[in-house]
Image (cartoon, rainbow, N blue to C red):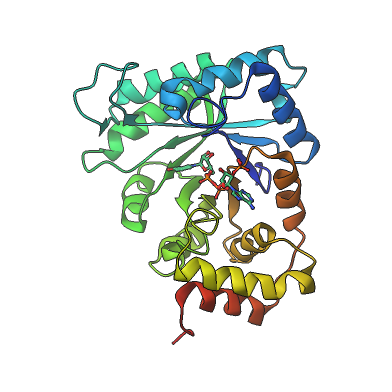
Amino acid sequence: MKYSRLIAGTMTWGSWGKQLSKKEIEALMNFCITNHITTFDHADIYGGYTTEANFGKAFKDASIKREDIQLISKCGIQLQGDARNNTVKHYNYSKDYIIWSAEESLKHLETEYLDLLLLHRPSPLMVADEIAEAITILKKDGKIRDFGVSNFTPSQMDMIGLRMDIDVNQIEYSLTEHAAMHNGTLDFMITNGIKPMAWSPLGSVFKDDNEQTRRIHKQLGALMDKYNATEDQLLLAWIMKHPSQIHPVVGTTTKERLKLAIEATKIELELEDWFLILEAAQGCEVP
Ligand SMILES: NC(=O)c1ccc[n+]([C@@H]2O[C@H](COP(=O)([O-])OP(=O)(O)OC[C@H]3O[C@@H](n4cnc5c(N)ncnc54)[C@H](OP(=O)(O)O)[C@@H]3O)[C@@H](O)[C@H]2O)c1
């Protein structure tokens, strides 16, 4: 895998969250790289189509070599708002739109190529042949290196995969949202050599206070001493134990948390501890 084991998600770096300044973005990029997080996950829509450009301005002036990092972006979601004249939120996977959107991402990110372009969400109206044409052109022109999808089911991967290789599927996967390991998504990806990346890898554990998250905190609390680890580290270790070799896309912009996250890649949860944590999430033992 040419991507770092942990991937830095940029969704909240800009106006959708922390509103980092150019200097802060540069510092955060450097911090990530020093800590072996060399892959940065973007989407055209982050910050209402503004975060890629914020990142690109910082990258342009930083002394970071392009070949030392990997840039991911996504296309296809058409938001309503000031940036685009759309009457309704929708998806667009026409050949021309995919090519145009990827080229916009290149311009904004101040780069010649994307390491990976993802179709952000499946559309009921997507046509595999048309997508394949766009991806073939983008690859031939050296504008993208890998192609992938995001939030795709096995049958959607099958359909698109008939026309071209899918390198990655970026899915929602965490202790509190683990349908992908039961509904065939991760099995399909192992069988077909499609690499999984997991967005929102901490799930709702720090967002919600309910019976489930209280059970999870209790169980993680009981294991923290044994592994000399924090709760967020145990949550990451839990998803990384899956045999599909999931790459978590971490969303934090807090340097201490990023450092803890990278250290979590060394934690090997014991088999029964993994199931104890699953049981806490499910509220019952496995059948
Ligand atoms: N493909 C898709 O459809 C899709 C959808 C959504 C997201 N994504 C990608 O996935 C990335 C990550 O998503 P996410 O932000 O939901 O991921 P996450 O890593 O599960 O959550 C990170 C958030 O949790 C907060 N947090 C609270 N307590 C924490 C703790 N103890 N340790 C670590 N973080 C803690 C962080 O706050 P602080 O920042 O204040 O530390 C941050 O806001 C996004 O940036 C984006 O690149 C992709």
